[in-house]
Length: 337
Image 1 (cartoon, rainbow, N blue to C red):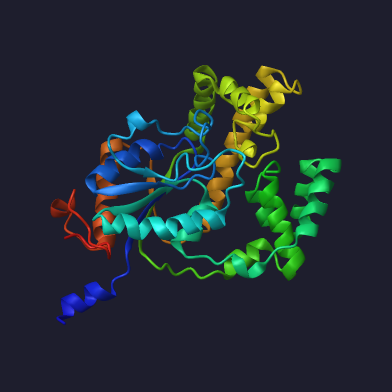
Image 2: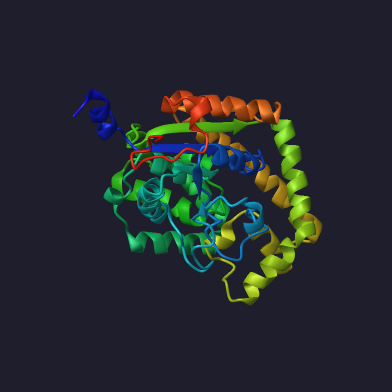
């Protein structure tokens, strides 16, 4: 075998990732990147997996996908408690399948734990579980409220509490469970995970001036309301999706549920959603700051210039000639043919 052939045989499969906070412009950018690099997109969003949850997740419509395959969108019912372990399992099958078709796998999303777990092959199974403890914490939250449970987490793992919203009860309880079972925090468990990737990884992050991002978030919330978010949430409840389902903890759903249940006025629910989304974006950026290997792009700058900069980053990372790579097939090791 020639040195070049040996190098190709030993090469790790290529994986492209685009991350960034909500409303930063990942969807628009991802389409142009995917077209240029012959990629198929894997959604890295923990709520877009649910069918019927479209407006509140800013889910790209089929007619807007410009012929680019999108995976892990609308794959389960909103009553299903989708998890990071299931996301990993799906990606483990999807990535080689995409490569086998001569395409580049391209994860796009803002759920930091989901993306990071695949990019670095995290192992969550070894911690185990304690169903009795989970039930105890669920009862505590029911009796004392989500904020009281979140305060319990903050007392033992303030970094995890900073990243997790009080209403994300499933992950809050999981973080508490990790500490309960191991005596070490969820944050320490993550930091102990390997930070080497099984892939030849190119990770690009979009960022934006905080004031500009927050203004975009506020505008997006108003647009969601105008597009029919209230009717979407009411329709889910009418279909029998429980208000306390994992899916309904997503931004845009829990706030509107409170309005529909009479706990908030519409104006209060909209303002709460804007506030919660701004805080979520802050937590996303905090999470991403702990991730290695990200090439950051200021999304406030010229879109076309940013796109060209991203193309150059990808070409440099994958050691490919920029002008000869666009729309070329990749082999099952992620190498341009």
